[in-house]
Length: 409
Image (cartoon, rainbow, N blue to C red; front, side):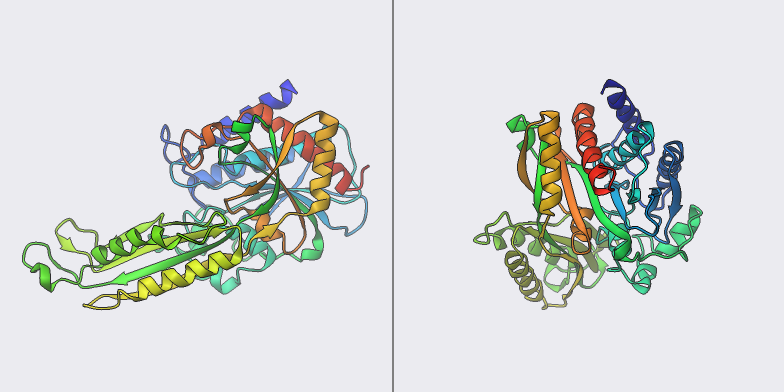
């Protein structure tokens, strides 16, 4: 157990060094130099653990332990390795590390599975560079078309294809995967909340993941000189946008079911200190455990934004992502619980308020997800931390489940 914990800590420390903001958290945007560094490390470990490595046309990484049954579907295990700006060292990458260590246990114990085991490290779950989020998993299952993928650009106008080429990735490789090649998907993730730590419970059995919508709102006005344009003659896009954003929290009142709304990204144009803004583009993130509350809030946001179309202000709303609330597979949850009983590990049922790649796969295959505690419930910040002992516990649970799902027991 101590050797496993040490390897986990070594992985986490090494991956955390691949950041564009040293000393200020993990910033590893998709197809960046830091992405390439992490990518090479992950592929190197996959090879070291006896896996056959390949990448798809999105840049997702797969490390496969072939099964004895010809053309059998694979049990996938892993998470994402991109980050939010100035994020933590555990969100996503802890799940990739867990997948690697499950493969290491297969190799150590010389296990030859009937069904293949594939460790997977996915790109752009956060949506920090190209927006929307869950891009790696959505591309795998075919929810992101080739045209949509090629048309995505970052804030600097760099396309996905250009960014991939910059770090030597081949965007012409196949992206969509036949669902028949996937037997199950397992993901471990930090909780990103305080429940497990406050209860003193090391494992959370994820029963369901909230539904979410991400909108992009564009507000257009008229640029002008900050000193010579009278206040009553202005069409200030930023003032209009700020008023809208300030009203959003009130829209959630009465919705219930953990419904939340967040404006997390706001870009102002032309972004000059002495220029009246003529355009603002911002995001709206809506989440709830019930789909009707998500849809209700989307309608309220669109109505509110539309009400500002006046006095030289023009608005529009584009939906970038919509994912329904998802239930996890009960049979895999039962496997996890059996493993916890065998390992004498306390656990509790929990719902996820954050979106994960697991929710995308759940429409196409059997999915199981585990949470481990987050210190003080903190995430998406440099202070994010989880205990390597908890990750090691999750690795053992995943290992036991993977053995059963790959037909070795």
